Length: 109
Image 1 (tube, rainbow, N blue to C red):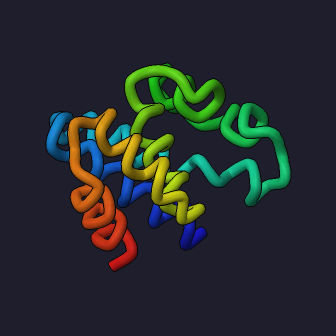
Image 2 (image 1 turned 90 degrees about the vertical axis):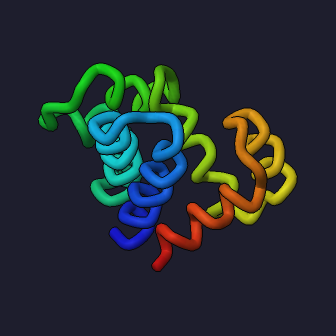
């Protein structure tokens, strides 16, 4: 549960400079629900089927596609301490590595 909350805060923090508040909330939902498969020991599609999530959030969670998928994809390398990928992914977002790490620290706090 803690990991899901950190993912949610981190994804929302990464989205903050580029997305409006409502869209940041969607990025948060992608992060918070991204661990439901592990929590329930089910494929993600079954774990989230009863939730009323937007199509964009569903796409990010089930197919790693759509407008919110990049934020989730930027969270995972930080969790895995993959600094090379963190640097590459930061560049894809138009951010610096420092900004990504700062967002992660913010999420952890």
